[in-house]
Image 1 (cartoon, rainbow, N blue to C red):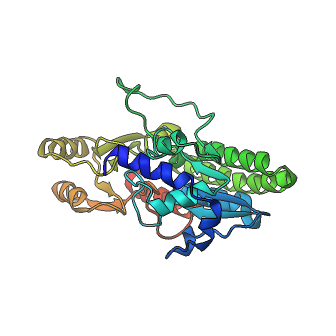
Image 2: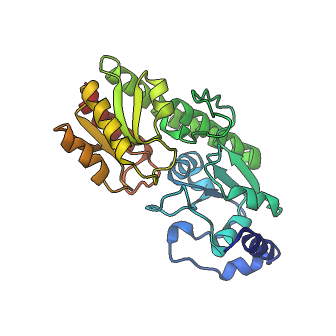
Length: 300
């Protein structure tokens, strides 16, 4: 389907009366909104933001996850039913920095709700010659940046539902304390370790910068679906040997074969370093803690 067709479909959907949504049902309970005027209707683009929204809003909001658990959000596009859900929401919580490539079409077609860009206020320094063209969206993997995302969500809830402002801000403060503890734990436990690690794709730039680590990648892209060439594999194997690295990281949503080939060449092993894009179990904090444990095995 070309872009003109997509825009035409979205334009048609916009004029469908909201009442028609009442008869819509979804196979996934996570993506089924019950219209309650007393609650904010909140849709988050992918899992970490959904969890942040749940922790802040709790029973005061109807929080819905847009990209289903287990689906890679990088290349996801909304269906007609997804756009129907988006059109009746009060707030759409997005990561920003180009991560949600479908958001422009929604804005161009007069979306009446509020789009909350959680990257607002995050100052990013990109060490890249082409940094005007290439932006890394993986801010949520840095707990310090995640705290800003949480506060942005809390402020958006407060602005849209002022009578519950204290409730949202209090919940946010409690969750921010947990993120502070996570940040402190990572900082303390990696402080005396080596710094070089090999991730699968270029997702941990902000994490590495925050904790004085050096990220090397198999796929030198912000998208995990790139392909490693023979030359790439040769370079990574050489890097691993030079830096005495014996653990190669993979991810939940990719075939570990590439990482295993490298590990075999250096007599090492493969562990998972999750970008939390396709989370299927646990929470943001538990998954980040699991990442920390695997990093400690590699670096400490």
